[in-house]
Image (cartoon, rainbow, N blue to C red; front, top):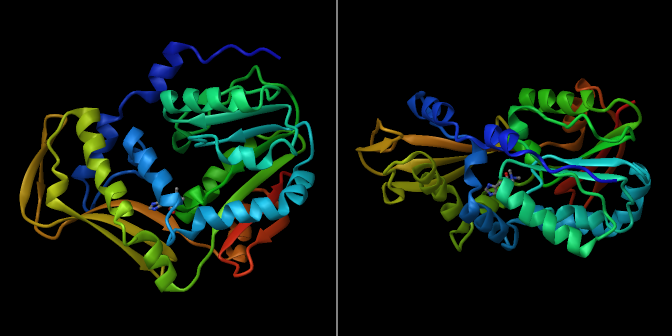
Length: 319
Ligand code: AVJ
């Protein structure tokens, strides 16, 4: 099967820096920046470093679950599917399923064309018989699937508890969007972080080496580069706390002093102690998450967890 590359115009339209969106968030009260802006080249590298931290159990446990239950997971999905991975980034996690799972086609999606094509090149080298049709797409703004894709069962792969970045209602909406992109047999394989002791969560987002702090602060450099600006990371500190009521980690950049900055030609004022909300990371008990997926039209099939039930991998079918 040969599929043409994404054309340049489509690519440009989808990756255009969203100055208005970003400025609207920084004019708002409280100020906020969407977590997708963490991932410039440096941010992606910092996130990779986070996944290797002792305190960040998320990636380690998810990988262990996939190692231990790979054959069950592949059996639940079945062979010959079209696997679609929104926000695939480095395309590392699909390797957990290969070569056991024999998809007909793999569609990694990412907001960064550069990152995506580099990842796909590496993947093709290691799995030359895998059909890959990559797609540049900001999946938080809607799924754009090409219409020249084969008519085989479509299975979405959304690992890493990326779903935790959405507010719960938005998570249902996003799952509904995936659900409606499945026409026949198909499903959703998803990794979800679980509610657990507050101290464990706190440590995972406040690591001793300060990598999460660097990751959070880097968003300012990314915005400066993207839009032209002088947001100074030295004026902010990293704050991450678990909001028990809402069941989510909240990350902020807190201004340590009153100051002004310019971004995309606009003057922004920061009071001493003022926070920019940069990320939510929702945690769900499996039953809570299953209820959300059901509201999106998915049917629960399987649940795999580590021994401590700190992380969950779930498979839902579309029917
Ligand atoms: C990629 C959204 C799953 O919420 O744990 C890690 C991002 N932020 N440390 C998470 C993140 C700070 C991560 N997700």
